[in-house]
Image 1 (tube, protein in one colour):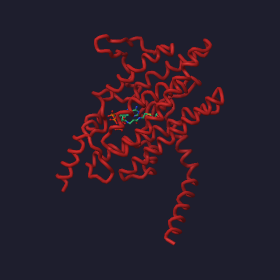
Image 2: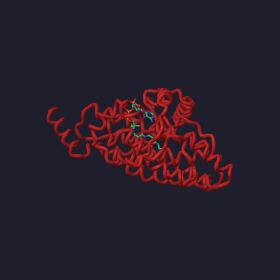
Image 3: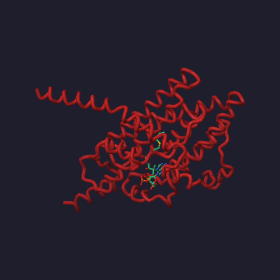
Image 4: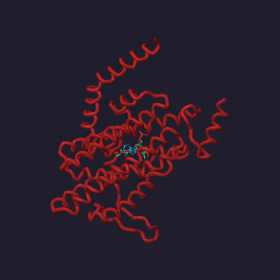
Length: 311
Ligand code: 3HC
């Protein structure tokens, strides 16, 4: 009965075991995972747009090929995560409808414009760098399909982060104009990258329950600090400065202190008032509508296969 099921579930989570799709789970656990995995998948799909805009403007064939591979990876991550969400008993068409109608979110970071080629470097280095810091702990998430999806996604994110770092390193050590372009880009992407980790812990309504269920392994602020600590030394190697005059190493703790994040901006962006929110959803809905014939054809083909196999 439910009491025994709850006790078994609690024991599995307490023992750092995996919950699998066929296991009994509290309705709230299922809902939280659908929310987080779907929004993670939406982030990957929407995230293709800011970078996609630069595929036709890449400075060389080599850069173009790398960027195309990265954008294709993001699409694959999205489809992987929609499949993980579907193991919880919801169809991806419902999730996409919730994205298109603003009932589900995607990462705030993708509501900022990509204004120069150097942004491809900042997105790889900062946005994918932050995504790795956030995603590595999810490899140990209590829900099996989500944890396993993360293992593969994290491997590909590392390539994304390295190619971004390499773009910025090349520009930063190039002509003065190239250095200036890299610096101007990092100035725009630094603070929004810190916001990716979510609101401060004392303003994070989902954290406590997500941590109790072994979905969230570290708090928003903890991962944000981990990202700052690993990124500041990399900026020094790049020869670029980070746009925060309060950034300084605290010898005592070994962590970097940093300035106040503009949480009003964050709340505005996730409310839909960021620089590119409307454009991103418009492009997404347009792509969905343009792709209707492909989905219909695939369904018709699947039905034909099904009837044929029934002979
Ligand atoms: N952008 C948009 N919404 C955000 C957000 C952000 N950066 N940070 C928090 N929020 C939302 C939350 O979704 C929640 O709203 P909801 O209840 O309607 O979902 C609300 O703000 C309160 O935040 P909480 O901290 O209480 O919410 P969570 O416990 O869910 O923590 C999170 C937020 C840390 C983003 C967590 O959901 C998470 O780890 N998600 C998985 C990782 C993910 O989605 N990453 C996307 C990054 S981009 C990416 O991966 C692509 C890469 O390839 C470049």
